[in-house]
View 1 (cartoon, rainbow, N blue to C red):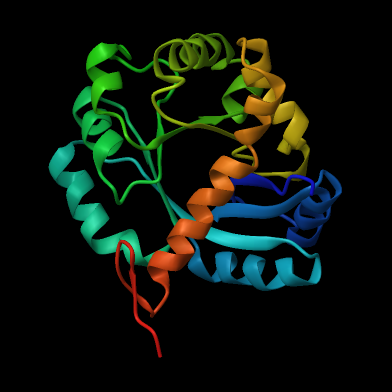
View 2: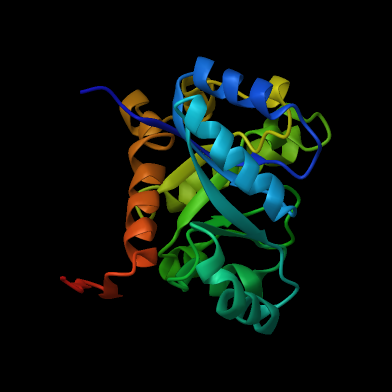
Length: 226
């Protein structure tokens, strides 16, 4: 059985031809996408339209908190609204909290961050790290992003899982699963391991969260029957 590919971040905050976007997503070989948008009506429209293209669409919120209290407040109020929660960590305090909070699905370190990924970060991290490919395409962030991606693979691979997403806002910014995963290959990971970053790893997070959001879910390992 072949892989089921997932683009774990499509950003719909900009106006775009949704049919063109979904057509390109399907053409590139994705069957699932995770989409963020400040406009919830636009997100719901994209979800519904995705059905006609044979693409499963899931909602994602990307939090950019200033500090730990702001992060915890957002998680308490927003976790149940979306299938996926990601946090962009602009400082070490937010990074350490996001890395171990079970309500967070992926941790995103931005290029040019002001802290190091060291043994202290590696020791507490439990959640997946997400690398948005768009920062590699953008000339203004490319150099810092490559340095960041190397740091992530060098210090965190084997301690947590890594996901590569496109973070595309337009069809031209989309990349195939093989292009996305090639980032990790260039950094020294095996091809099958790299492909896991755009298939089994994000797919597992989606399945887990769909179960948690189900009315039959009571607690970890406990489901209501009947």
